[in-house]
Image (cartoon, rainbow, N blue to C red; front, side, top):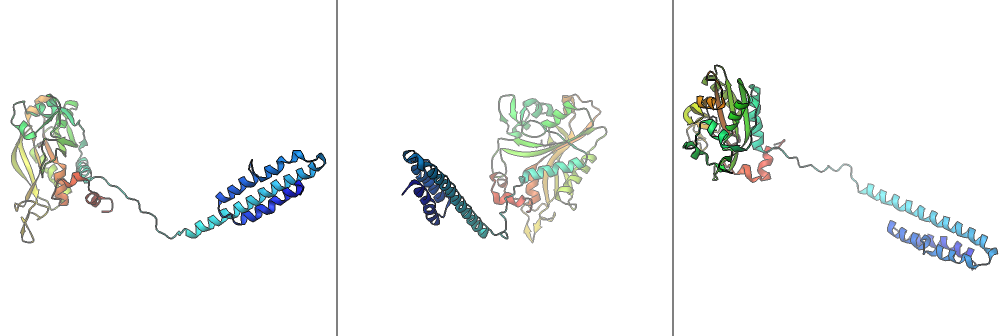
Length: 347
Ligand code: PHE
């Protein structure tokens, strides 16, 4: 057979081979076999140089035709395979199937309650103030009328970093910092983390507080009571009642612990005839500590004696537990998604 004949044979051969080629991979193998650098077309072309010059033009033309035809055949098969694959994809695709639901996260319940508390006070005209968690003795204790030998330091179970630097044991140092930085009138709430060397069923080494401070002219305990009652009713419901119990804090005088009527038994001391465990049948639960700012604190921050004001501080975890009827503090820190998701956007 002359070379032209050999070239002409290639296309029908590829045609037959293509009938069995079902994938793009097989197609690529055939392309290499026929059109590749060491393929069958190339092998025949290598012989071109050895034939008599007179036969070359015809053989050359046959080579070009063969090359073109092979390309066409491969191209046509490729288009057919791709169309087939697309059909299959479309057949498998069910546009009526529901989409995949996304897991939507939410703020931690303690964060949510802390924000809620702050918002209530913001609506009453309070600003938000922040202070550092790593604090110095002066702001955590000294300026708050807690001298080095004061027994109240024991209450605080302080985590010290050096003799003078510590993790703040309460948010009250923000009071001192704010008064040193600003002149009265002042109305702030200071949310944040606090730390104590304490760990058992009802205490964690880190927890959250919101501090409140209002200082100006002629501010009295009646103002304190009014602000706190508005707060308690916003958090626990309009039916909430409130009482002050005399107490002691070095930085307030007089001081009071504030109770609200038990939100579980509605102040009755019992639920369905069973003693209420949240208020231990008293009908009252403590929610915060408060008082009129002690004159010694004004002295420490250089305020005139003519100002007056009140301060209060509350534990956010405690408020959250009472608000949601949570009986185990540890739930807030285990980060079990089954617990946390109950405080999600749709919960
Ligand atoms: N700092 C006090 C505590 O941590 C709470 C408090 C703040 C009491 C402000 C009175 C006034 O227990």
